[in-house]
Image 1 (cartoon, rainbow, N blue to C red):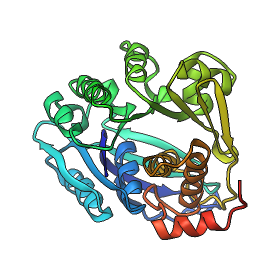
Image 2: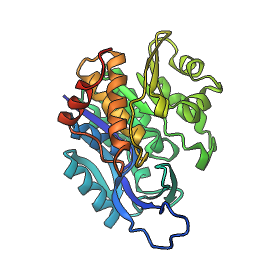
Image 3: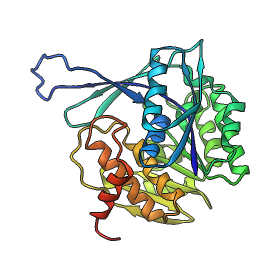
Length: 313
């Protein structure tokens, strides 16, 4: 079974701030593969799930690095196209000593991921077992329409579709009709992921995560609100299912949501019930934030060891 992931692939440049503010030593930047969709694809591959990534990168060093890092993780990269006219995005991640981070994007607008075309995206869906997409590409054309068309094609073929909202309202707000675009994407999704207050609540216009998730879920859709250290809650057919967070010594929270998505999807594609999929997502996220970098997700063996040590539910 193959999961097709469509979206953004870029490079992360991580700078860890010293714990002592008086220290003037220059921290060594660490470059790694990044991009919300690409991180989820890499996480799935680490868990042993067959995964193919579809997207566009620039004809530059960053683009080659992004593709190489996905291939090294075990992702099928034959669906990645190189474009000449746009640069691969670089995300500069400044990590504080408590593991929280500040994120800066360059270039702040546009980037090679915007060049994804509809025919490439829709053709990639054929024969897949699951389609996962990231809202990052919903802000830019032609990628926006390509993503919506791919989601529509998958739904028509009976292929489950998941959407990670990735609203990034702190950077770009609701400009250019983005709320309507997100609403259109949600209508095409079977599963919607998002951080509880910044995304699920913001999208629904409610301060209560459960009410917000219920509003987005409607009848058949599953909405998963990630609650950081408090775990996650899912709303499906009017029933809320929750799973507590797992203890973790926080080193780096970059990519925690992407890691959760990988764990959840891998569990669901194997037939796990909703509560177990939430638990798996929490386990993958907890493992990831206890290590440096968004791609520090567990292998299948490491995940199974974590789950075996947890109390029975």
